[in-house]
Image (cartoon, rainbow, N blue to C red):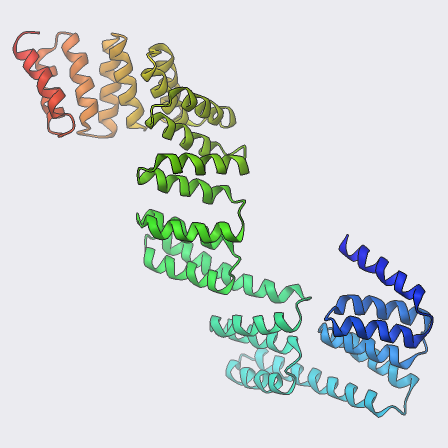
Length: 429
């Protein structure tokens, strides 16, 4: 659409200017404004009307040089010379271009032969002689990249990009290095070499300050290390680059939830959902936070939304079962816990929750089985031992109940409750 607008504008201007000189003035004004793509289109329009005008071909060549289309530039210089073979300036510019092209060819041959240091010297000489030609700095950057001198590579790519912002490959070359650094960070992260991962992600951001994925991965690493403050800072910077990042909003919610700031967590989970209404993990985290806050009805709404979006989301069924249990809807709780363990049989917490619900329903054999299923996954889990004790007691297995409560008592959080049950057993209740 933008190109169509520019072309329409140029067509209007062409109608206003009736001579080659008028076209040259229009082209020059575009060049002076740094609008080389507009100048290029204006040149084509002018040449189509005045194809025997040497000055138009000459300025067309200059525009091509600026855009790093050196072969095209040479073709247009030669055409200008053919039309005005007495113009010394045209010849000098064409010779200068030939010098650049020959130098580039020689440096590339040196590079292809693997003589990196010599190639760097040759390109650096060219960068001094042709300081306004982006393509020289781009090729110098390529050599530095092969040499794994990434800072110098990016430095030269950025010079190329500043000189010719119209060539996409210069910015892509920078992004490619940033992505390599982020990939190296991923490798270190998987190895749990977090300091090294952080260094790589920071380098990626340094090379490409708009690289949102690197910000997120850096924040994720800090989060993994429980360095919540740095994670929060990086996520804030990431959202400044692009405010519509649901994963960053959710992670901020996770941070605030982890630090006990539930209202802030809820705000960020809701923001993540507003960005992506299909983000089932955000619905789950919102529901779990609301559950912790005792807002059971809204927790149920959020968790049902998570399940609707992801019907095989075991954690959401488990949390929804807990909501039901808190509301006294035990049959519904059991159904949700059963669905959860069907989807994720290794979730010890859901087995424990199921045991608790079965005990409330006086289904003691089922409670006993679920408690043991939990303990098979996580040995010495005090909540499961407590529920096992309750079921064994109800089934008349005093010795097994006593053993279960004794094991539950080893956890300070369950000591008081377990001791109460032991006292009751000793009294014959």
